[in-house]
Image 1 (cartoon, rainbow, N blue to C red):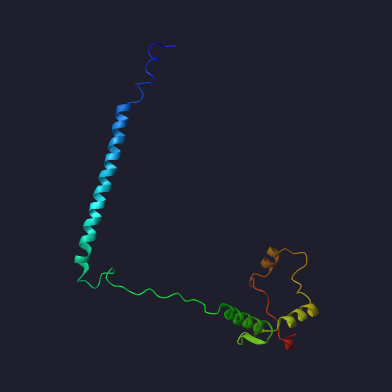
Image 2 (image 1 turned 180 degrees about the vertical axis):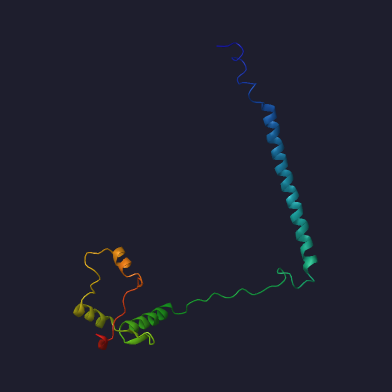
Length: 152
């Protein structure tokens, strides 16, 4: 063991402890000074604001608009019942979706019966979806429309 390092307790040549304490003290002092300056500025602006904007009508702080009331559902169960009734009417009735294109809506029970009677369309046994799309590039990915009974 070296005789020079046994009595001091730390290495004085690597860390300048008084300089580190001085820097820490200056940082603390600057934080306190900044806090005081900001507090004084806030008090100054708070006292000056009403005097400057009292005569001006075009500053947003002086234009007070009432916040709108929330739009609450008075009877949420009734709204849900109306929605369900409308959906049920769409699922169980005939109607036009697009008269010009000849697209119609049929009841879901009738659609399931037609699907059982006619079966699924043969789109290519043993082919992958990619090969089917490449074979028919003009078609979209949407399902085919149901034909009218007289168009078979």
